[in-house]
Structures are given as C-alpha cells and as structure tokens.
Length: 436
Image (tube, rainbow, N blue to C red):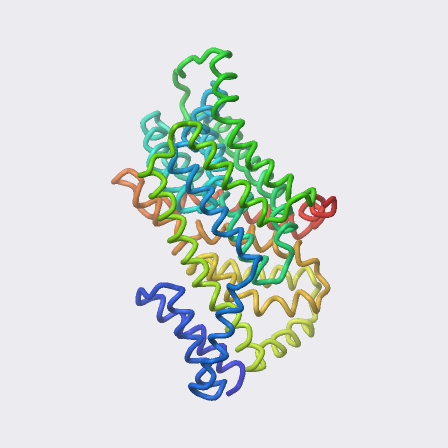
C-alpha cells in the first residue's frame, strides 16, 4: 500500500467516524485497528497493537496528568476558585471594563486550577456574561473575554495538554511546563490591554456603574485567606519543577496533597464533594489516556507505511526558509483546529511533525510552545471550536452563533499575534527553561 493511500484513508476514516458521533478515542482505535490489519499481516498484527497500547500509557511520565486533574477538580468543586475570583473582583475597583478584565483574571485563576478550557468557559459564561449584559456591556465584550480567558487553561501551567504534547513528542515535560509560563502571562496581559483600549475608544461598550466599596482591611484579609494559599500551591509546583528540587510527577503529587489540605481547612472537603471531585477527575483522566493509546500505534503505522520518511523528505526539500516552513505547519494546525479538539490534533500531527522538527534542527521546546499557542486557538476557532458551543449553551437565550463567532474574532487575532511573536522571537519561550 502506498503511503499516501494509507494516510488519506486514515484521515477520511477518522473524520467520518467523528462526524457520525463516535468518541474520538474509539474512532482512533478503530482506524488504527484497520491499519494494523492491512499493514501488519492481518489478525497477527493485533499482538503488536496491544504491546503499543501498553507501552504508550505504562510510563512514569504520564503520572502528572491524573494528579494535576485531581488537584484542579478538588479546588474547583470545593469552591476555592470562586473565593479567588471574589478577591480579584474586590481589588479591581473602578477600572475601565471592570467585569471584562475580571473575566480574564478569573480565567487565569481557573486555568491554574482546572486546566480545561470548556470548564472555565461554562463557569464564567454562566456567571459573568449575564452580569455584563445586565450592566449594559456590548454583547461581543460580554462574550469574547470569556472565550479568550477560557482558552488560557491550555497555556498556563499546570497544563494537562502540555504534558500530553511533551509525552507524545518525547520532549522534556518539566521544560515544556516552565516554557509556557511567560507566553501564558503575556497572552493574559494582551487580552487586558485590548479590553482597556477598546473601552477607552468605545466607552459605550462598557458603561460605568456603582461598585460596592470594600475596605482595605477586608481586601487584605481576604487576599491572605483566599487568594494567596491556592496561588502558593501553583507557585510552589512551578518553582519545584524549575529548580529541579522536584520532578513534574513529585510536584503534581505534592500539589494534589496540598489541595486536599486546603479544601479541608476551608471546611469544604465533604464526602459528597470528594466523591464528585474524584469522579470528574477519573472520567477526564481515562478519556485522555484512552486517546493517548492511539498515538504510539499511529506513529508506528506511519513509519511502516513510509509516510514519515516521505513527508520529511518533501518538507526538507522545499525551497523555503525554516520560518516559512514553520508557518506552513502552524497554518495546517490552525485549519485542523477548526474542526477537531486539541488532544486529537496533537495525536494526528505530532507523529508527522517530529521528523521535520529533528531534520530542521529546531528546538523542540520552542516548537512545543508555538504549538500550544496554536492549540489554544482550536477551542475558539469557528466553525467547530468546542468552547464556542459551550458558550452557546450558557449564554443568554437570544444569543446566536453569529454573535459568538464575532465576539471570538478579536481574541483569535490576539492569539495569532502571540504565535507570530513566539515564532519571530524564540527566546521569549526559551529564556525561562534555559535558566533551569
């Protein structure tokens, strides 16, 4: 079988299965099974498939995934996140576009706790969007920051997707987690800058309103009680990984333990909330691990069919600069991201991209950071970004998909601008990991 026939058949089969509603994990498995049958000698090849599945998830590098998910789940369901958002709200005062800026800050907080974009969008969209519309905010400004800040969950550590990307690509998990810190903060600042400038130019988009006065003593008290403790957990996790004192796995375990202790100190570790946290964390972890099982076998099938060497030879023979080649690869990811979710994009593209990365001599951590910024776009890119549909579900009843698409556009452009900056200035992403 020619390699291009196999690759075309794979994508057609995967797309068809996903369009008819089969979960992506099962779709990957079914398509891989067909490929194994055709390329590895019929039913005998399934023995190798089982070994590939076992080796793909029986690795210590993936242990941080369930730990970080459980940590975020505990903090989310115990109400730690809402306490943090309330404290941030107290400090914002009368800033222009206050609620929109609060949305970005809340999204950054939820990003450090949940690591799941859809969860942040659902929570912020159901609470802050109606409040902004009630205060007279333009609909695009009431929806856009929710979509943009929800996507921050992918780019602010501890990011589950960063661990998945690093494990699939064979990159350093520790360096990948540390490398996304600066881009994540930079993106949040770019969002806030856009909101403030827009409100200055178009004050009618965010009318001023009376804000409840909170004394300085109350602000300071609540900051020490409800903001600093959970943030300290995140800072200690990143500091432990950065300094080399703890591995990502050890940091994840310590962070999870600290989250349990913090929830208990707040009196929120009831049996019901504990059960809910464990159940939601287990569901998400199993889903991610099942999807990961398709990566190793897909990569092996690509190599066996000759697709890996053929695509690498074609890419390196192109008469274009390395930056142009990188932009072409990112454009491909951007187009794919319009239709499928991020983990699937990683599993589909990384086995194809890895040989090109090595052949071009690119720093894999730099590529991973640029890829992460691009994957963030997949959640809010029309027509099928998952966060767009979540937003439709929680937005006011008269909100149309056209409203949501228009609201997402400025934040899509900001993400593309950040991606261009990362490509043009790699040291922004590589400076912090170089200090490890």
